[in-house]
Image (tube, rainbow, N blue to C red; front, side):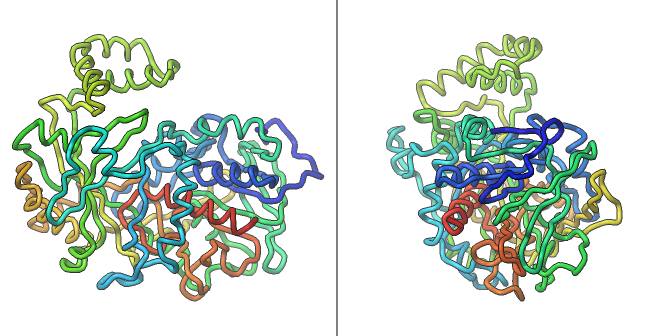
Length: 513
């Protein structure tokens, strides 16, 4: 059931087995999992049903390092969280990411990937992917195409959620399940504790309405950046969870950049190898990654890539989005201007539709520009950090000072990968590396983007001396408070983090029930 703190008053006698803070992918998934196990859930969301400028302004932050768009555009305070705008790409971490790696200090997790394997499977159901094809080879067989591999680079496909917006995907459960009480506009402002136990969470609206929610267990699903911000806020008695002094330190994102331009040697073979795949309403994207043995040999971090097809025709791109919205019956997102742009490109759209329906593939016009788009892991000991300023937001919380850095090891990883790709793909395309990347020119940094993947600032470790949460995601120094976000990742690999966060969520639900 859905309530709004702006208009509704919580019952003083209301009881819940667990209080979940943040209604994004992790929070919604946890609420659904607990409810299905017969547990009652309080799910608190600081935003409303739709994105609001007043709520978004709470995320305004000071940037003192490299430009980082995700500090603002990659955080959305709304029911559904950032799933209201992400693409929905799903990818597991590599087994190699869970192990200590030579030359990568503080790499590895406190447990092997096998610990998460059954929970990765549960996460697929939470993502609407229960019927997706698990085998990459089977995906290619269904297209009657070879599963092409390249020397030095491993080919694989990622999977995409058919409905990426979790507020839409789980709307029926959130709206009608008697065990779930979702409260909108309930922004967490203070953790109330007695000894090592959290006894309540004080919440406030931007209009000044306050209430305190109580439960035996509290789980914070605020996202990688906001989690650190909330638990860095000054409090009497200090921060018992920060004995390691790592809270807010070693922030990791994925460096996203065009490392080279691509000139296919044979258009049909190239597009058959790298175009997006659509089978039985599921999308799969062909990608490449560096084999673990080459990471060790070349002293790199983990890194992968995709072929980025960049269409310079803006009206053509708008027409493509319009067709997508019409196919998904999202008629409210289609304007008259959208339809006018679409009408101008009917012949091209027919080609796209034919490629999609008959070939089960995405379509790129012949004049599209193609780039090798790399996604690079950052060092687990990254010098990037989140601290607080003295400036306070309208809720009274101190704002963030954000310092994002890219290290020479990270740049060298991108450089080595690009040179390996140049050799590995020689039979299918001409790879022309960015000259500033190869020369080590600092100008290349201006072309490096972040990926809205906010990780690493509340490191998972069995010991409070070396981490902020334990292996069960319990906040060190507390008995009943947990963090479920990519903030807990000790190291991040290069894979999109949401799938792993949801695997951790399913594991945490089992731990608490």
